[in-house]
Image 1 (cartoon, one colour):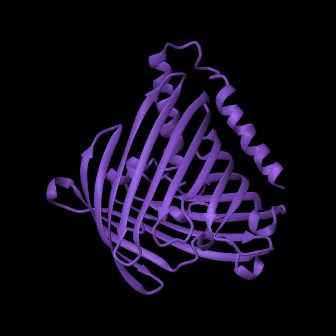
Image 2 (tube, helix red, strand yellow):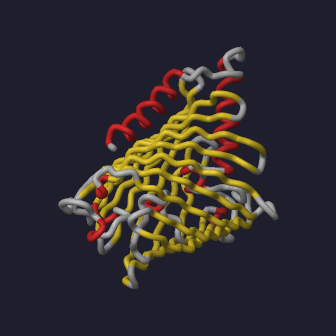
Image 3 (tube, helix red, strand yellow):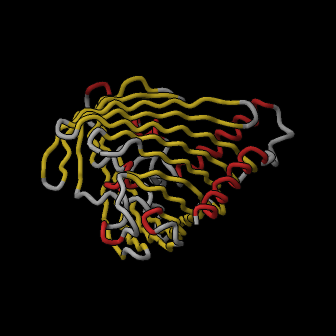
Amino acid sequence: MRTTGSFAITALSCMLQLAPATGLADRDSTDAADDVDDLVEEIDEFFVNSEHATFTDDSTRVRVRMNSDYIQKHGGEFSPQLRLHLVLPGGSNRMRLVVNDDQGADVDQSSPNGDDEADAALRWIGRQRSDSGYSFDLGLRSRNGNPDPFGRLNAGFEYGMPGYWVGQTTNRLFYYTKTGWRNDLRQYFNRAISDDLLLRSRTRLQYFEENVSNPFVEQKFSLFRSLTDTRKLAYEAFYRRVSEEDSPFDDDQVLGELKNHYQHFVVQIRYRQQVWRPWFYVEFWPMVMWPEERDYDTILAGRIRLEVNIGGSGDSRLDE
């Protein structure tokens, strides 16, 4: 099944290069760039929270998620999640309390983090601009009941590009006293196709000093469609190279020889809708996977998510 997954990634790559900016082509370059920025901001506020905005956010907010996952040949799992971002008084409005801010290894259902993990940190906001920002965190992580102090530097910036593109680069550098260094680099390219369609490429590289196999590599292509103010869709295809520690499959579920890392090809659809109240959301993620652990056989998977967002300008935001 390697050919099927590769074809999906290649097709979306071609779309990124060839798709015309319908509805934007007749405007001058300045107006077109503004249109791209506006659509990126709309999608990010509803679907995927901008990384540099997360690092320097000036709003108090609470996010609670209830995820119900199923992966064929593996089984079902239920995972509640809590995230808190609290603006502290004093300190020239530069201090934050963040809880479970780092869930980057668990952004997609196909690569869950099997550890019982939580973290809390004090954050100091450095330079904060509309297109860039950085911050520093000092905190404590609890991993399977073991405390692990850490430090973290967060930085990101956004920039315009020719041809209706907007780029964004973010980096998070971690140091854990027990497990060592980790780095998370992400490169985004966004392009508005029309007033309600956005193409996005995300390249992600992660290094974990504690892992036997490095780096974590991911290339994702997403097509976001804004149906209404309260309903949106994301069509996504991605390739991912994961370490044995981050595989969703247990050792006894792996076909063939156990390895230090595995290749994944995934196609998924994410449907997200605001229901009942402005702070309540529901999501459905049907997925098709071709994981190396299962000899690239077709594996069906899915997620149902209930989410509550309270407070600040980030009420409708959702992590990647």
